[in-house]
Length: 100
Image (cartoon, rainbow, N blue to C red; front, side, top):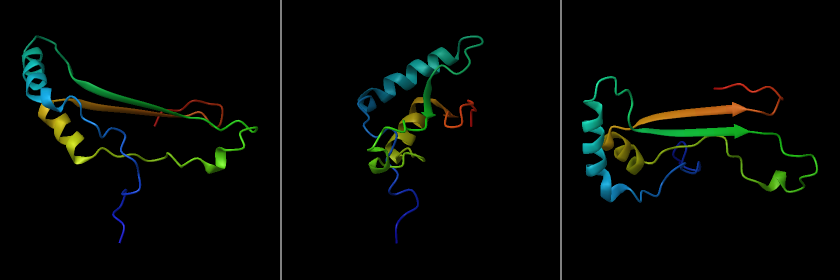
């Protein structure tokens, strides 16, 4: 039985910052003590969906990139460092931009 989302590629899976997580977390805690700090650590993901050009003969062979996931390692990193996740997706296929 296939796990839900198992075939969906992770947006971020390589954590080259993992060795620095405790130092990042300490900096975030320090900055959060400042008045009106807001969210000091933010991972922002922005995706735009566009209709392929009609002359693009390879469009059908490309993978469907709808859907994404963050693996456990990334979720732990975000939680450990106090990072907020902000995701914006825009459908540009109909000619009118709309955020979801």
